[in-house]
Image 1 (cartoon, rainbow, N blue to C red):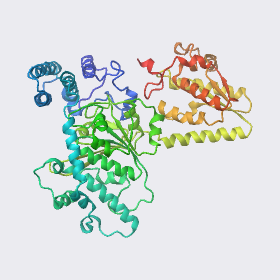
Image 2: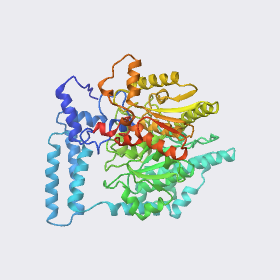
Image 3: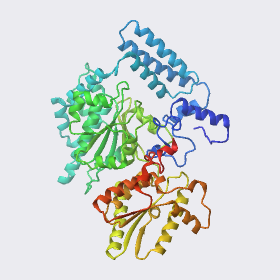
Image 4: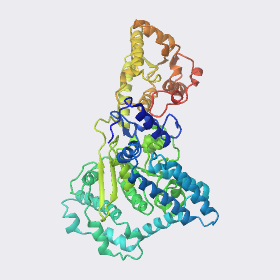
Length: 586
């Protein structure tokens, strides 16, 4: 890997910046398309990184950033061109349009590859989009995908397969269980393993000339799994092949990244089986056409997929808040279908806000296929969640690999945040029952970028002043409860639980006089960035004022102090994962 330290070589810095700009991956230039660093932080652990996250392998990045002509890169570009031109040959019949499209795509290809700066997947997306727009064919592979999905479904519902997957083979698979609980555990392991084993033999489904019988299926079922994540995968799911009994299986939250047509039917059967065991699964498809990959439109229009997913819930909103993502996880249905927001194999920089927040809420990611494996495993970047990949080797083995989450990742689960909230509520309850007045103090914490420590000091100083001034008053200072690793999503989720508890007597919002008095106590002049600021400047306080007005309807005895509610309309919403308004970064 090329070592890159910004600020040492202006020419290299400039080329590095152009790499992101030319690939349309620079958030500052494309803020509505490219994820912010904070949103990427939901998925990729960036604390020790010197570079921005890039959605390609390290080898590809190093090849491009080295600025040397590379035959391998040029070969990959050429393969992209061949695939795109083949689309024209295969799907465009108009004799006048065909040569025009080929010329158009060739010119665009030569333009984009001239400087050897383009990530091949980004090049392919642009060319593919031109083909779709100019040909009028919304999804060239749609009928092919329909056929593949139906073939696999028909195979899985055939008597041959049903008998094979239901057969008991004690000597080779199970041994002799000692208890009913072990029998149940082994049955779960065997059934899941048999479905996954089909991934290693995709030719079983669509090679019509290949004779498939019971013996070939048994051979498939009994073939060894390889990879560093095999035992960890089943252990993570609470399904142990060795027969050990887990007294109470932990229900996991999983993100399953589906891949190719046909094989997706196996994916769905596995996902539905895991859902029947109590796990919650985000089943993720592409947002639009990408060759034979399954996208969210396929799921809506393919009768085979609609039938397979008839008991699932669909998520269409691409900008869900943390609370809304958690709300979906708390609903009755265990399979939640969504898109990743992209038309690429895997590009976290272009993924939707909903995808990023769902990623953050999960216990592990299960990716499917070699292309997704390359993007997770052939990179030095570490992720915030463990990533499994299930694919198949050339010789027909199922490969399950695991990339552990970065060891320094700090994760606050929903349960963690709710526990912290209820601990605070218990304090409020006890104080109120002992005759104290409970005050909640809302103020600026992260709304001025880079000033979190100073904002915390200002708030704590003023709350200490109030505590000395007010008798028998319990004041909640949110800055005292901030923990390293918490982002705006975590804080707002935790505090909303506290704020809606019904134990607040006075809800005070920070004024400029409060800030000015704090600096006076500290013996400092008010810095320019703080002059004129109050709670109305804070996105968090703006959202809290909306909560306060809602609480006031149920508890009209609660008092509001500070700027009037009407003055809180200037702020819009957090930039994703930020503690300040998205407007400030635009």
